[in-house]
Length: 204
Image (cartoon, rainbow, N blue to C red; front, side):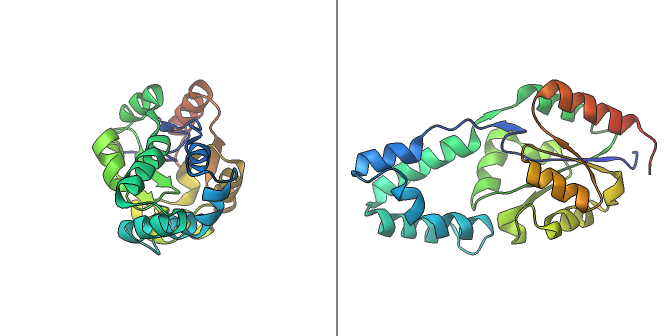
């Protein structure tokens, strides 16, 4: 297997995740001003993204902050995951699947507690790449340079040999600062062309 490596983000890249408006709908349902639920849960989003709290604590805080009973909390979580998981980017996933014998493959994702289990069940990303690195498991989020360092270490690859794909400019720039090549995902055609060029190129 060649020394080239491709590392991809999940949300907005391997998963298509258009906004569903679910939080606004919950504000309306609870009779709250727009944006209230999101503000009340700001620390839940932050802590859940880096694994400072687990799923039980997430549910407890949501129930307490929004005055929801257990059944309502589960409905709230279902709406959260419906937007989070989105739909598979079939074209890109199938292209990446065909790369397995040609380069190293990994995922680096800003995530939320529970994501690995749900994404594995729905999309089998564990069968697509060699390593999946979730922010809630390593305790740091992109664009923190440590996220890129940890991913390269787990894959046992040099940053210079890696192409990182993300849909946020700040993460693309951070990957470049960490010594990687990086590409901003805007559509499948340009992304696939960029990956193909990287895989064909001589090892650095």
